[in-house]
Image 1 (cartoon, helix red, strand yellow):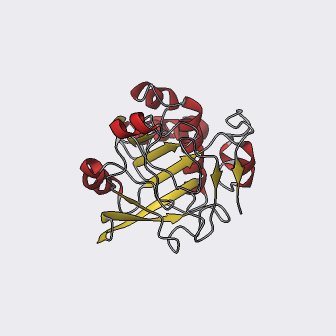
Image 2: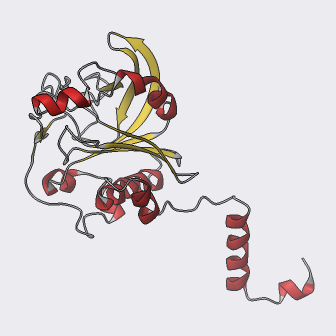
Length: 241
């Protein structure tokens, strides 16, 4: 180390080292809520903020790696509207903006109740890690592992997976007043299922949100991210055990 550099106070040297690491790409910059919201103007910025908070908390707790792709589902929106967004956080890009089904046990056009229980046919909320893809009864699909105890950690045993479904038809949804519903899976249009799954499989993240504050208080990932303190929740929906 040059003598001149050694005379610089340690605090300043650490700052310079961190700046160099960021400049060289060694440290991943924290995703910016405002930039992501600008990419998806139909999305609620507070929902994106909550998703990033849950992601950050899961990374800090060592539950997941710093996945670069994040899917965000806002079940506070009606099924007749797009409510699934997939972001590439590393590149700062919006990859998909799609309709997505909720479970038939969760409600009609609006999803209002959620569950972690087998046979409920309800959707689950919170942060999921994406897992392997496979071909099953619903064609090309992707398994999910719930990261939230009591909220979605039974996703794999409940066979809550991402798959394509003919009943996810936006045109038909407008005619009948709601999208077709699943047994709890976040189903998407068949035409987009394969590329969306291939983008998200094997260690990326999916976050499902609802504005009800009750389930958010149950989440062990939102609390350490500060989303509740910023007022992301509202009262309204019910959450089953």
